[in-house]
Amino acid sequence: MTQAKVHFFPSEPLVALLGNPNCGKTALFNLLTGSRQKVANYSGVTVERKEGRLHFDSGKVIRILDLPGAYSLYPRSLDERVTCNVLHGNAIGEKRPDLVLCILSAMNLRRNLRLVLSAKRLGLPCVVVLNMVDIAKRQGLEINTEALSGLLGLPIIQSVGIEANGADALKHYLAQLDWKNLSALQVSNVDEGEESTVDHSAHTESDNIEVHHILQSLNLDQIIPDEVSDRLDAVLLHPVFGPIILCVLLFFIFQAVFSWATWPMDMIKAGVEWLGLIISNALPDHWLRSLLIDGILAGVGGVLIFLPQILILFFFILLLEESGYLPRAAYLLDRLMGRVGLSGRSFIPLLSSFACAIPGIMATRSISNPRDRLVTILIAPMMTCSARLPVYALLISAFIPDKTIGYVLDLQGFVLFILYIAGILGAMVVAWVLKRFTSEKLRLNALMMELPSYHLPRLSNLAIGLWQRAAIFLRRVGGIILIMTIGLWFLASFPLPPENASGASIQYSVAGMIGNALAVVFEPIGFNWQISIALVPGMAAREVVVSSLATVYALSSAGAEAADALVPLISNSWSLATALSLLAWFVFAPQCLSTIAAVKRETGSWKIPLVMLSYLFGLAYLAAFITYQLSLFFGLG
Ligand SMILES: Nc1nc2c(ncn2[C@@H]2O[C@H](COP(=O)(O)OP(=O)(O)OP(=O)(O)O)[C@@H](O)[C@H]2O)c(=O)[nH]1
Ligand SMILES: [Mg+2]
Image 1 (tube, helix red, strand yellow):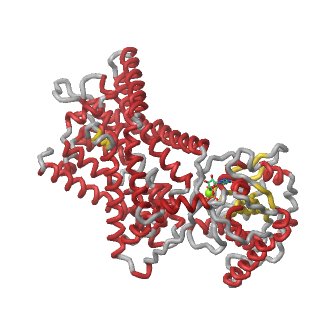
Image 2 (tube, protein in one colour; image 1 turned 90 degrees about the horizontal axis):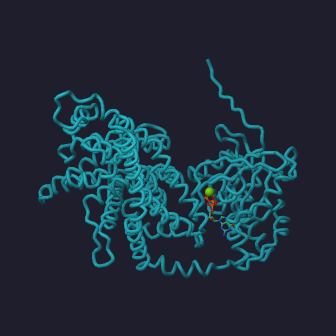
Image 3 (cartoon, protein in one colour; image 1 turned 180 degrees about the horizontal axis):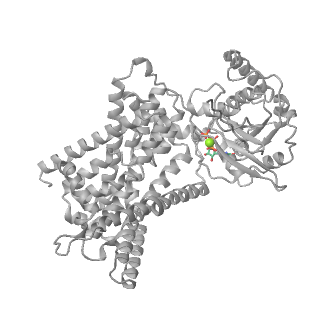
């Protein structure tokens, strides 16, 4: 029997946003559709197509697609391919767009116009949107849009992607379009099918000449230097000062994560304690009280407390993203990364992995070299994702004294910095080893990367970014972490201990038995049965290890006071060797199933995720073993 797939498309008109990377497509998409997709000042932020809807006052609705940025319609990387597939009508489950909005950055007409010329050959109705006119005005750049429109043979609408009403003119234009008859926006000389036989170098040549003519006739062919950015780059990209400033910046961020977070963390802790007190006064000593206090409050409260640290870290990451500094950091690190066989291109996906490995792995779509992309995917989980932060922060608070050395160096922040560096170094070593297995030919590492102008980050963007991060974290706390905590509470509370039992009741529970069995495997690396239990639900999400430890220890101790007391409990019952070993484990261990699923999705088979899972577990065990044995040797046991 033969099978056929039939796709049904919504009847509304479909509009695709096409443009060079970083020209403001997503900013406009958000303004048009009210979405909150990620906008940042570097190329390659959007790597998937995203759909939104624009509702007009008349009741009419159109669908809008935000697409990854493309330099040309001859795709060189996976994200550019996504864009081309949509435009050629080859995207699975999507019809060919009815209209293409070609977004131009007023600040880089030469390169942006080449894409407009290619887009015209698609044979789709096209409208040009001239974005970033605010910067152009500030820099005294006068663009005669009417003349440009005449030369291109297409309507031009101006926009400012960062102002609340910056897309109003575009909305108005779209509202009055006759969607049944868009042929006036169509250019007839169509020849750029994907399988086109036309030599595209011929187009490139003629497009270059045409763009040159257009710019000349508009008096725009001289390059206007961005003096502020140039002056900043003279320092920030200086061969000596540049790397020093980058190091100081990163170091400062980790210091701030600890030193700024103290009072909001204290407030959350006090809130959790207060709630625990209310519940224990209100309820009799009953299983429900244990579930609420030892299970939910200990577990969820134990993770919630790290929200301020996560937000501080993201505040800085967003600041770096919005300002335009990130691609500069990639440039500074390019040579260093070249030594291990990677290019600076891998830097941004790796940096995204500090939030979470999944967007990092997706961001590798912008790496055109398949070998570089694979290596970057394989090492991305070693970057310290924000889910590790609660685990690190817990162990650091319990075992590293809260001291300031020489007025500036916060010891806890310094240890956190070292842990981040350990992840990065581990990743670089793995990349270097992988380089040995790759033929010379595949190691083409020239870095071609656009350096955007510096922008002053907008407070509203920062606030939205932080709010989104907080929402993601709170959803995890209220979702997976809560569910795992309740599940673990049941497993750790039943079956009940026998009448004459001597130890804590958890020892007799299902979780206790599993923990004791696993402890045999983990004994050589210094993990006790409580840690062994916590590692299992921790496979769902790393923070669950913290909530699980809180629940396990709350149930192991006699009273109901344990909801907030995980730090003193572990610092009294674990040796420093165990804590260091657990930290080493977490630098490498692939404690997150969704990452493995994302790797499967991105690489298309189970081979790479399985390789990743085994090598990361192997590395984690080895690192923890060496750390533990060395610590014992130095008398820290
Ligand atoms: N001043 C100014 N900045 C803008 C404007 N439109 C967008 N931006 C900024 O330009 C940067 C890039 O915007 P994005 O919307 O992420 O660009 P994009 O085209 O989606 O980029 P990719 O997804 O990487 O292809 C961000 O820092 C925006 O805040 C504008 O009209 N004026
Ligand atoms: Mg985008």
